[in-house]
Structures are given as C-alpha cells and as structure tokens.
Image 1 (cartoon, helix red, strand yellow):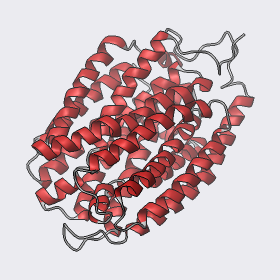
Image 2 (cartoon, one colour):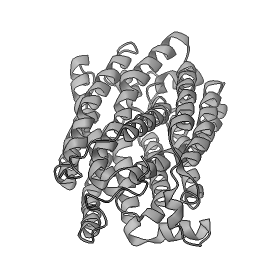
Image 3 (cartoon, helix red, strand yellow):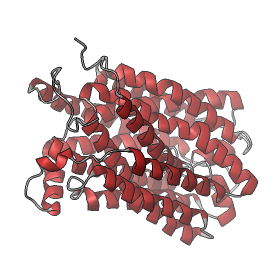
Image 4 (tube, one colour):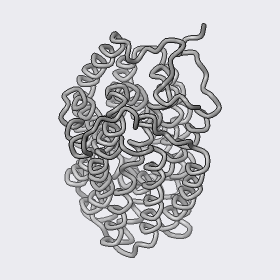
Length: 426
C-alpha cells in the first residue's frame, strides 16, 4: 500500500497547480515589478525613497485591508467564484497602473489593485488545502511557489527590458494581458470548490471573522506570517535602487541579475518542496533562515562590487528567502479547521501583505538618498532589522509545529488509505 507521502498527484490536481501557479505568477509579478522599476519611476516622476516606499506599501496595505474585510465571507462562498471575482478586479487594477501619469494616480492605482489582489493569495491557499493531503502540500506549494522564481526569470527581466525600451508602463500591460488569459483558465477548468459549505455553522460573517481572529492558535500562525513577510520583503523595495546606485551595476545588467536569481529559485523550490514532505519542516525552516540572515548581512553591507559577485550573493540571498516559504506555508496551512480555512487563509494573507507594507514604509524611512543619483545610506540597517525579524520567526515557527503535532496525534492530519481531502471530487 502506498503512503500519502508517495501518492502521486491526479491529473486534475496537476491542472489546479498549474492554474494557481499562473495566478500567483501574475500577482507576484505585479507586486515585484515595482522594485526593479523603482529607479525608472523615481527618476521619471521625481519620487523620493520615502514616497516610493509609500507607493509600494499602498498595495500591501490595501490588499491586507481587503483580505480582512472579506475574510468573514471567505468560507460562505464557492472558492472558485470568489477567486475569479477578485482576480478580474485585479486585472482591471493592473491596467489602471499602466495608464497612470503621475505619483498620485499611480498611488491610487496600486491601492485599487491591492483591494482585489489581497484576496487571491488566501483563496488560492484555501483551495490547495482543500484539495491536497497534508503530506502532499509541501510538493504542491513548492510548485506554486515556483511562481516567485518564474516571475524573476521571465516576468521581471522581460518587464525591465520592456520598460527600458517602451517605458515603465509596458510591464503592467503585459501582466494584465497574461492575467486575463489566466482568468479564462480559472473559469473554464477549475471545478467548484464548495464542500466546505456543508461544514458551516449558523453564524454571521462578522462573527465568523471575529472568532477566527481571536483564536489563540490562529494568532500564532498570523504572527509567524507577519514576521516572515517583514524579514523577507524589507530589503526588496529599494533593491534595484541599491544595486544601481551603491553596487554600481548598470540598468542593462539589472534584468540579468533578476533572471539568474530567478533561475536559481526555480531549481531550488521544487527540491525544498520535496524535502519539506520528507524531513522535519522546522529544521528546514531554521537552516533556510540562518542561510538567509548570513546572505542578508553580507549583501546589505556591500559597496561598489563586480557584477559577478553581486550575482552570486544575490542568488544566495534569494535561495534563503524562498526556502523559508515552503515549509512555513505547509505548517501554517495546517493550523485551521476545515470550517475556518477560508477565513484563516484570508486573514493570514492580509497579515503578509500588511507586514510587507510596513516593511516597505520602514525601509523607506530608514534609508536616505542625497539626490536621485547618489548612493543609498543606511541600507545596512535594513539588513540588521531583517535579521531580528527572522530570529523572532524562528522562535514562533516552533510553536506552530507543536500545534500541528497535536493535530497529527489527534488523527486530524494523518489520513488513512481510504480517506480523502475535504474536496474529494477530482
């Protein structure tokens, strides 16, 4: 008899992974493209580092608020319909970004995009948790997290080149076009995900949200997510500006830098996904965090550096950031009960977005720049703050693991050969 660790994905599960990976690819690309386009945007719109940090954080704050406002409803609707509704709004918001003419209109566009994009991540995670065994989720999440690397390999470098050729607006139009195609795939191929509706209790959306937010076990998961997001994102918003003005790489080299780092992510993430289903997820998370902290301190203290060394250190940093995401996501996704899963994932995604926004604002306030062509100052301080947040996340992930072990001992996560995930119709 095969164990759940060795059970292969069904054809439908593979299709869901592909579509959700495309969904995450476009959302991550829309979010991440702001960083490499930062130097273009700051110079074309005459934006200061603090103002640019606000522009980046506007997406995170609005998406976090949106996720919180809709969390109470997340378990009361078919997850496919909820995903499609907000994804269409995300497409419209991305187009709005592309037609922005100044700082104010771009800020509004990022807020609109975030309002719709904030629900997508949590809903996608709820779908994965509904359709896959706990012992399969590391592999499933590993493939979906490849969207992060793919956005750097394909989207970000190509977007930068388009920005260099035709202006910074073009990457947003490219993202919107791909997202429109993905929306059609969601509508056509993903089946309704609504078995959780049979588990619902008779309580209002507000009560459902409140009970989800105040539950102690869930709060530990939210706190871990926030710390991981701050630690993983704080250096990114000003990353391209630091690379150009401090490390002295050129705008033409920037796409290659992101592409090589993205390729390394595509190679590493599936391996991490498999490892997370076979070895202790906490140990894997701790190793990845220690790796990331070391690379973070080294990178943030660099000055003018040969391009080859910038590439190597950036790869090491990206591997550390990515490698933390898979084991932590697999553990955190196992905290909520099925009836609370949508609400929990929505709130959790909101915590990630809001924490990322706080990180962007904090980085913008810490870092200074004399003029738009001068090196950034105090970027090393951003690196040290990242290390502190990462150490705190290592402590709390152990608490999460204890919660998961308790559920395993109670038989809630280790399924027998005859049992199926919540939504078995695949």
